Image 1 (tube, one colour):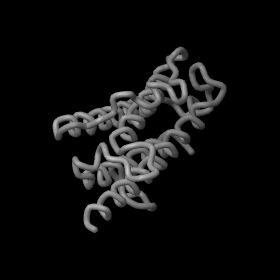
Image 2 (cartoon, rainbow, N blue to C red):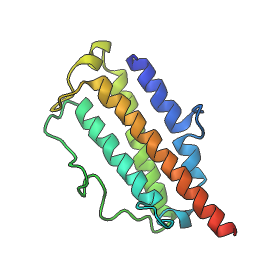
Image 3 (cartoon, rainbow, N blue to C red):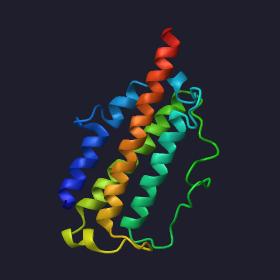
Image 4 (tube, rainbow, N blue to C red):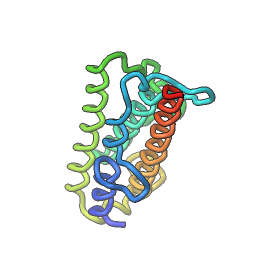
Length: 161
């Protein structure tokens, strides 16, 4: 897969029409404020926690695209899952959505500056290449988007019963 395809897939996942369902923007637009911090029984993360987690890992990818070999996010650390991950009001919800949008804008802009051979180069400070990192980020976003949709669906069903 080439750089143009990665950008297209990133844009589709974020605000397009992915074949598997709704985009991030569509899904998050449908989540009422009262669902952002709730966790249905058996669910370990809230929608807010998942959104911040995606923002932070997109930030990881941005740092790697910029060549920052020292930047890392230790798994299961506060950099991976924020301690303060609540959205308490609509202003904070909008702020979180803007932060997600900022990562989207920066990712696409940075990738459009790269040449195709950059994909096969090693990711800064990592043992894998950039194509592997980008594919992983897309999978990561789609995985957590599914969780967001499921949590919202459970909370909506519970509220309506």
